[in-house]
Length: 383
Length: 207
Ligand code: SF4
Image (cartoon, protein in one colour):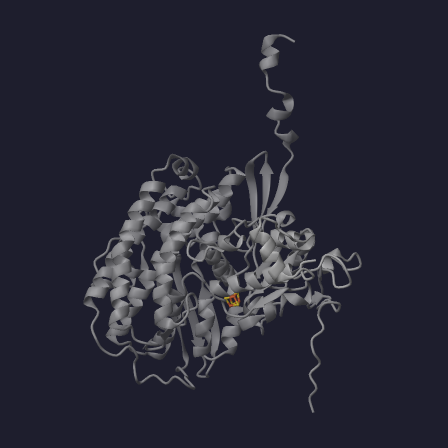
């Protein structure tokens, strides 16, 4: 054998396992699938050539149960949809019922809703960044930092609603209980300290070379595909599409606050990661304004009947900008105490539909990063 | 042996630098302080499980921070969340893959009985239909402190397990199964609907 022959790679390496594909089932028990999600991946060497998601491991009949319980009875179930963000789920559902029945919400309650929704966004994005970095191999440490901040916000939720995660706080026509002045003081303190955490986190993470290598140019999504697939939330804005329901619909009192909508450019994982970090800065701004402006007054519309609540015949779709995207509830009322049809438009499920397009041509290790950057919660995907 | 030796004498000896113990005590002491849970979450309760492992509650204080993604390396399965009928066979399979001795904590209303989703057609009404459960934690979701309490209960159980004699631990009895049949998807439900060897609910007499 002469030297040139020796330098040639062995034939098996060039033909990539003789063109045979390897099928791998990732999940439902996998440390990085964020729950019980399963993907059947076909691999050529290490490259993904096909990816088939398998849903339904957490299908809990949410919509069917919603049709068989009273309107108010569904409120605790909405907590369990996206279990990171029970406050925004409550809000979206309350908003739809309020639309359906034409209920007014007092001013203080609207402010409280904005405050709680933005706090939810902070803790959701913080934990997402922690999980995403765990998926990339920064095992544990960023998650610990994120959960430290999350616990502070959960303390606020707990002292207001009585539960850390399943708050069940909003009602049709307002909020269940009022926040006292001491609560507001504590919340202010936490919000004031939050940028410190963000700066620390960003300094450690966002310019980290490994993070940049793992995320830039990985899982690129074009704005066109994103719009066609119905994506919303940070996923869509990472592609540079300016669409934020807080601005578009102006629900709640969002038009009263000054905030910017961060936009990405490349639509890759790094942009999606950045989007969350930047949104947290904006949320802090909104929170400061809302806590400044919040008026005194009742938090519940006294005219709303709690028991035997029957909205008039009709249908309504209420949506908000949840931390993961457009969260909507579509309700049809036949005049009874239960909705005739109860449908959830879950942001993370619809954002997941492009997963295969994002993953094709990347390695298996990148699949986890891409999935992490989509920000899914299985309770909402499978419902 | 530790029950036979007088406690006062024992501490007296300890003061003199002599440590008296039994094999059983030493073995259980080691086991109970390094329980490795299986890292696997099902639903909302899993987030509280992560919170227990994270900075504030810090399960490492109890020797349980080594969450293993592989069942082959795990001692404890924390069933945290809603078990659907689609997922139940995989859970039993994971349990079967764990080496003995193995323990199960059933965390939250869903894993105990189906919880708020009990009426759902796709929700299993309690994981104890297919695998034996050592500690149940009620709550929806249980607080991290509750999970820590369950962990301590489990440690107490491990500590009290005998290695010899008639009352020895189940995993040392070769007649006790360490694997359980995996349910299959039937026409309407999982088949069998429960493992009769494990699941014997009390009969309710209605007059
Ligand atoms: S018990 Fe409650 S919190 Fe836990 S998984 Fe079930 S619904 Fe979720």
